Amino acid sequence: MTESDKVALDARDVSKHVVGPTGRIDILDSVTLRVPQGESLAIVGASGSGKTTLLGLLAGLDTPSSGEIHLDGHPLHDSDEETRAALRRQLVGFVFQSFHLMPALTAEENVMLPLELDGAEDARTRARDALDAVGLGARRSHYPHQLSGGEQQRVALARAFVHQPRILFADEPTGNLDRRTGNKVCELLFELNHSHATTLVLVTHDTQLADHCMHVAELDDGRLREPA
Image (spheres, rainbow, N blue to C red):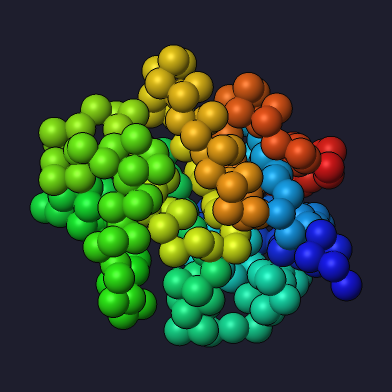
């Protein structure tokens, strides 16, 4: 099997429900999708359709009520939180709408963080290289509050790619940015994704961002309407 034949994500009949004060609430219903290694998928749909829930399940942040999810061949649905956390550190990068930078850390220290958690001895050098790649080498000593929204998201991109993840998950990565800044971040996201040969799975309301992806899956009330 060649690299291009490998499946990065394989979700089969995935459902998710929770029990609230008024009874059971079905969030996802029998979702099935596959994403080959190195390809990109946009998950789109109206608010409340289950997009972010599905992204969290695919990334191993939560477990499905039923169904199977394999991440790079590893069965997330049968794994405990400790195992899933280890897989996330090893395989996964994240980019969020709200950046999720640590306010008390500089840009460089924020990018170093995942490397330090893995005990990398060259964390500072790799962080500086990653910040250079997103055009923020001169801003590495700045704290998040000293950076614009676009710059903070570029720091988040550097942090997500610094440990060269096999799979990158992005939840509305341009949602808090104006159109011009969002377009620049979008271009940078796909440039980094291509140069690192990373599999990309993102949730977005931005049709322009979705159009950059190789596949689009639309969720409608928890069901997959048009699998790519």
